[in-house]
Amino acid sequence: MALVQPDPQFGRAPNRLGMYAWAAVWMWPLVAPISAMAHGQVHPIVPAAIGLAAFVALYLFCVGRGFGNEFRKPTPIELAGLIGFAALGIALALAYGGNDEGWLVLPLYIGAAGASLLTNPLVVPWVFGATIVQIAFSVGYNEGWGDGWSNVFGTFMGSLLVLVVKRLIWYVRQLHNARAELAQAAVAEERLRFARDLHELLGHTLTLIVVKAQVVRRLAATDPVAAGAAGADIEQIGRKALVEVREAVTGYRERAFSDELDGARSALSGAGIDVSIETAGTPLPAIVDSVFGWAVREGTTNVIRHSGARHCVIAVRRAGDEATLEIRDDGSGGSPDGTGTGNGLRGLRERLAAAGGTLAAAPQPGGGFRLVATVPVATA
Image 1: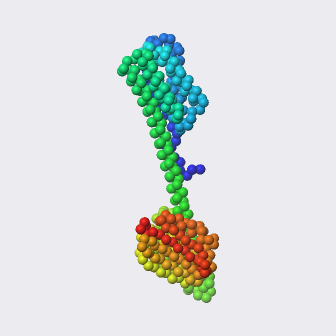
Image 2: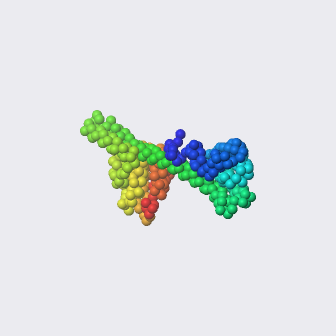
């Protein structure tokens, strides 16, 4: 099921009743022959009335079907209706056109109906054919320059107008469908962002809680004071995690890179891992600072969880137009899946790619694991 529905006022196909009403508005030129029949000026009146009523019905059918078909080819029934409509219009114009009562405007509706229903390559010959029929009637019935050529002009331009309006309606539908697709993409991107943030936030925080809980269990019998301090740390970490999750939900979580380094030092030390932090060329631009903060959090979590290391080095360097973060340990060389392509690293790689950067994470030949994040500073 789609996440976002198109705007019901614009994204849907035109309302059929509305299309019929729109088509009926343009039938005001037929007031003249209807008035002539009402005043008894048309003979015989019965076939004229039946023919004109059928002509109007077929016109509404063709236009209504045409504007709702999304430029597909007409069905055999629609094509038969259009041909019958054109034949009826020509027959009525031939039978009653000499009475000078508005019957000679019927080719205008023939052209408009074809323009609404037909597609390439038939629509252009149809429009020109209706125009030629209108010229033939104007010349054959000697309508004169004014009325005759105004009907010819009206037939041609009216048909073109129908083509333009139909194309514009189609473009509007496409634009609103594109808007709905963009909205769906935005929702999917937001879900991905939240999942990535939640994984990195809770993964790191839960790791710290586990480490502190192990300290509490280890010291509970021998050093209750230290165990109590570790328990207080667990409480503080939990409260901090609640705040970070709220910030992740709203999308406004920002934490300085220096704070992440301090957090990494504390977490690694608490896990019994000796840590060395080397920085050169800082401070960093805001985007680099933020993405490196996530990299430190993810890398530190993986060292504590998977490496079994005794020593870890976090090095930050900025040289020219490039900033590099390196995290390496002397552990078993393990990663979440042994290849450096776990969910956390996948999310980190996406963050770096958004900033124009790259990520390399793999076991080292001599043992241990190495993570290197590189971001261009000039584009940050």
